[in-house]
Length: 77
Image (tube, rainbow, N blue to C red):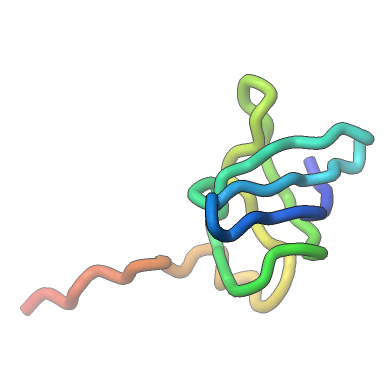
């Protein structure tokens, strides 16, 4: 499903997505696969599980940023 982030409260880590189907979904910042700066106004693609958005992908920047690790593991010797 696709939509746009209309609200996000950084202090508590929650926001609202207005989906293309007209519904509004509350989400947690931990559900974003490719976090990157300011979120309000960004288009997103996401799955819905039990009426909650999961695996939220921000549709901006390089498509490869979706697969980058937010906290890369230390290199092994």
